[in-house]
Image 1 (spheres, one colour):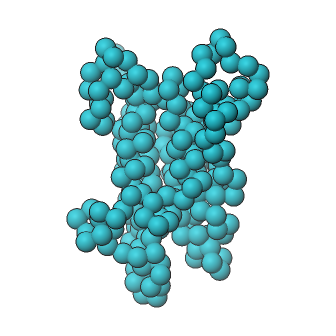
Image 2 (cartoon, one colour; image 1 turned 180 degrees about the horizontal axis):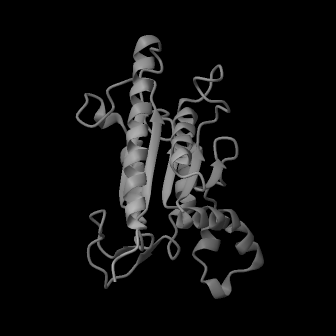
Length: 239
């Protein structure tokens, strides 16, 4: 059974295509999860809406609790880290992270950055060891990605007001969303990263409709491919 972590970061509560002023990223994540469910009805799905309920920001109390050795953590420190621990647990259990994240001012919304800061944890999702050589996914020395213990996939589904932000496009250098998310997740060991985005949101009309249709088609193709890959991994091996 596959485990999906379905996360929405848009503050818009509805879905584009079915509700006025609805979120395009919520539309994409809902489509991904719905398509997966048609292929695997018993899929386990954990849903977290950080657009409506943002995680706590990093604070001096959080930092003190995080970097205090476990045997010296007080009850109040444990309470400060409780939400972060829950977020990490969800990521650890997931086979696929389905992340709906709009581009705001060339990067992710604050709620999503807070989520990243809560899941990149020394001793939980990444470690530091001077005896460790090169990181397997990013060019860093001495860092050990603790979530590289098994295959995990991250699927970033985004929306952009403008257009031309994909790799090799004119505005690729202004896109600080996909590269930053890829780096953070691969840093903790989630080696497979996939991204699909809707563009032309400000323009609207036929350009937005065509971009939306293209994104939905690519999601269908990605779901088929990932489902086949994961199903193959679960096949019994010959003795």
